[in-house]
Length: 227
Image 1: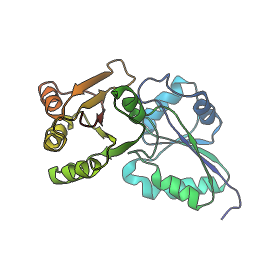
Image 2: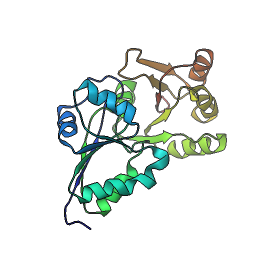
Image 3: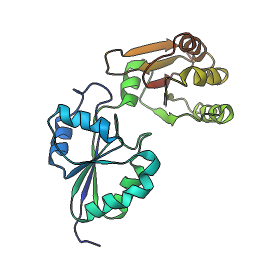
């Protein structure tokens, strides 16, 4: 093993609006040896918009374990690598956790480059308390598991947030209705984009709304406490 120590920068990227990238993130992307991306096509659009020309290496979720060793080899040569995801912060319901763990185990520097986040953007605009909250990622697809996850989260008096795809949001809210009852919900859709919309209601009313008019774009759901 090389005695050199590399640096893995975990870089948050815009969740929609390309202007939502920090000056520090741009500097890191310009100065790194290579960019690691969940989907190289998506990340190349961002880099091109800011006139950044760096090699882009792919790290898809389905192949993360196999590809991690090649990135560790580059860190062992003393390189600086910038880890990005399609939108938002890597590792949060996106690839990158295995690479971060391997880099730390190898004695390399791991540094966060914070930025846009659908979670915090939805919480901040929900109107619900956010001094303490529970993030559930994507809920299970089967009814039994989904109900159990929500019931466990509701045992504590905290605001709850999770991600859902536009194809599944209506079904997920229907399954959640018996558990959530009259709790207020916000479904934040297309955050920071042209058609950004925040839908407010209960699980039942929003399930009906999205069944009648299926939404477009990824959704971040925020659940408030009973009033």
